[in-house]
Amino acid sequence: MSSSVQDLIPQFDIAKTFGALFIGINIAAILFGLNNVQALIYFQTHRGTGMIFYKLVVIWLWILDALHLAFIVHCVYYYLVIKYANINVLTEIVWSFKLQIVFEVFIIYGVHLLYVYRIWLLSKGRSRSLPIAVGIIITLNSAIGIALFWAIYQCYVFSDLINIEWFTFMTLGTITFADIVIASSLCYLLATSRTGFSNTDSLITKLMVYVISTGCLTSVCSMAAMITCAVMPTNFIFLAVEFSLAKLYINSYLALLNARYYGQVNTDTNNSYSSYNRHEVYHPELHIGALEDGELRVPRKDVFKHPDDEAAESSRSVKPQRPMAVRMETMEMNSFSPV
Image 1 (spheres, rainbow, N blue to C red):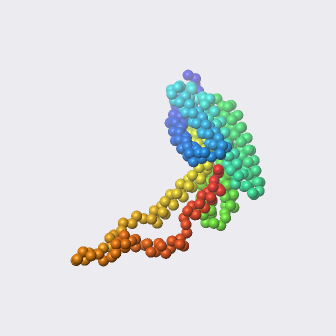
Image 2: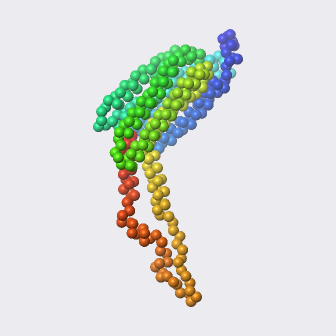
Image 3: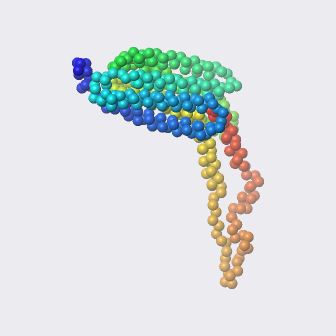
């Protein structure tokens, strides 16, 4: 055993290195399961439709997500099982570790381009300067990702990752900046699409909240990986955080594709609740008074009469019809949904 490896053994904290990677894999596997649910919901709700492009996009994202999970599982399995207790191997970088970074960056920039396409569709009938500007920013950011690929494949041991920290900071920083630009652009286009109708404006507000929340989630994950890399560069906690980053991007985009389904579910739930309140089960009491001789005080036709029947009959002609409102909400959701 060489002297450099002997010096590394007392400083090697398995809990903060490969233990952190193991926890990161479990979280990534959970997110992969959520992505499977999102993909299943999309195919079930769009069965029989001719939207081939989006179906191919969902399949493409699922394949990349599955391959990314396979690479990170192989990486940790290689160190903790195949090369168990071999300290010489634990300091080297296995091929699957490098390849999972390539897939992670490829997934993130791919999702960014899909969001740019969504911005392009939302800007229909308006100036195309905003989607073009966002597309240029994403394209320039992808150049930094290509530089990261080259830097990663020049590393052979984990200590070499410290020498390319600035590549990691630049990549995560540009990813966070792209998230902010995309979320701001979508919110601007949605805010300028207000029509003055309460139902439409409420739907637009919900979509804006969704865009901001998903953008914040991915940005927080990127910043967490960047901060942990800067504060703790000698352990693998920042790598464990990065394992979940690509899956959060896929989940956010699949949730965008399923926005129509979630909106319909909420609408149906609200309609069912209001309908239940309007048509409560009435258990009538028999308004019968028995005389000593057994005769009834009220006629038979009024025995089961609901106390609110007269008020309901008088207001039936002027009461707005709920099905029309449901149709209007469905049309509004279709106008702003991604497909």
